[in-house]
Image 1: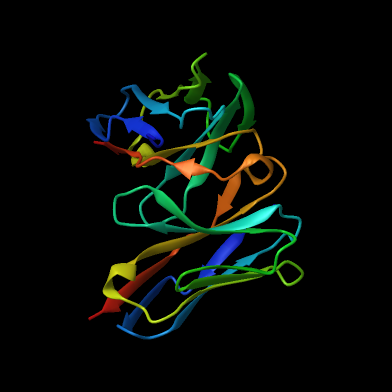
Image 2: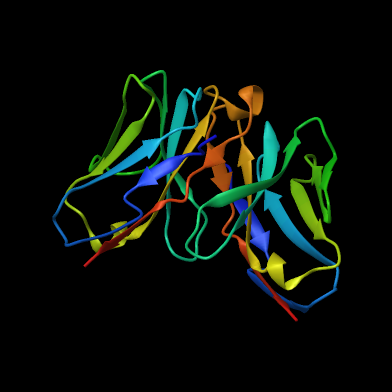
Length: 111
Length: 116
């Protein structure tokens, strides 16, 4: 059974700091891994999608890496801003079309 | 283009009642999935429908049911509501049954259900 864990559960940093969010999964047989952002009470916004054959994806100040063999992914946020404050969720997809999510990391960036 | 739309956005019910949640996928998308997100946790898969047939079911009791209509919109029904059903219910759509092959999964803003 696939399980996804995110560490830390919460993180508070001063503005401008670079930070790393971690995601681990127990079954390496995944099709892809996706990072989402969720603002309070809102839906999910996809940030980055990494296919199983890829090692990383970048979008602006965000960089996500994937190491299938070790069952790990990291989301790197450069030069954090108060607008980055949100909950970040990682999810893995197998061959069934359903996503299995971690519990999320709630990020607060202080001005 | 309109994204995934869900209704209602918020609703309050009492224990034992029934609720119907609605979802309209992105135009051209044939797959709709439902997820339940309890406060403080990640979303959990409930159902996937593709081409009007159930293609996947998560670990939820039979009180939960869903269907997909010819226009690919979908309804999620929950009977005999319990306090523990209070959650944000998210709908997601994709082009095909397996998003990793046919494209990404796009989520709606969700329906916030409170059971008193």
